[in-house]
Length: 277
Ligand SMILES: NC(=O)c1ccc[n+]([C@@H]2O[C@H](COP(=O)([O-])OP(=O)(O)OC[C@H]3O[C@@H](n4cnc5c(N)ncnc54)[C@H](OP(=O)(O)O)[C@@H]3O)[C@@H](O)[C@H]2O)c1
Image (cartoon, rainbow, N blue to C red; front, side, top):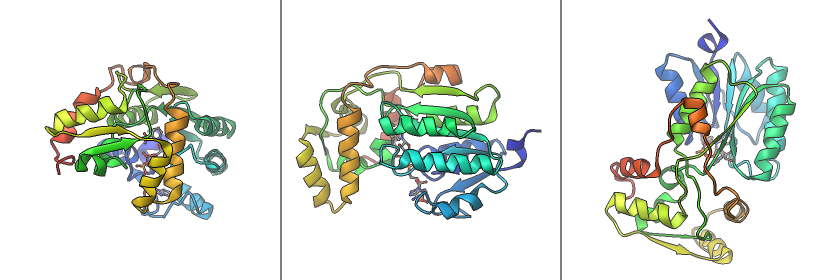
């Protein structure tokens, strides 16, 4: 019997887009899980390092999903400090959820590697679920998505594929020291993705390209925090400039199957009614 069957796996962001799915898979297989978030017990807060040690007690491995985003300044240092603390506490098996083509995310990966952990990195494309469990869901329901992004192809990856990959690397041998770049099977522009969602939902949903200044003003008008506008502008400028316009075989390498296509995601998600007005 190995450690992960007796001691819980700590899932940071365990109620979020990927963490929730990872926890569901582990629990379904009878493996113990501890949710690491502000609503977990004990509470885990990235902003309060004093909460990190208690959350690590009695744990066999950690799935690290940083919040809000690895692109935020200081994220790499926080991930590095957390990884070092985990290793000091004897928790060496660490799996990091990372992002493609983001300088700060790649710095976080280096900090993880330098911590002495038995690491695995899941370096992911944009999640399809940003359209249904993230900031885009309201605009889609309202029938218009306005973003500062042009005709750049992104290989949106399904959070269920990420969770399947995380489950595999946490429960199987042979993934230590591996970096898996996870993408979906197809490049879509944001306009393409919105069109697919409109088709699946049976609605006319418009995509409009706006400037960064217009986007910042729209975020302010919705009374969202300015850091949110900064982060999204950063992602749209830095990451969606064509650098990630390529497909990888990461899902195939970990799971031995093709990734789920965006249209399958759109069809299944439309059926929940989340994009209906
Ligand atoms: N979204 C993408 O397309 C994408 C692509 C590649 C990589 N990533 C990376 O994936 C990570 C997660 O992004 P996401 O968009 O999927 O977010 P998410 O996991 O859906 O975020 C929500 C989760 O974070 C927790 N949380 C919120 N504030 C927290 C805090 N201060 N301390 C601890 N936990 C906190 C929430 O639980 P509580 O409310 O209970 O605290 C919840 O479990 C980021 O590091 C990002 O860089 C995202």
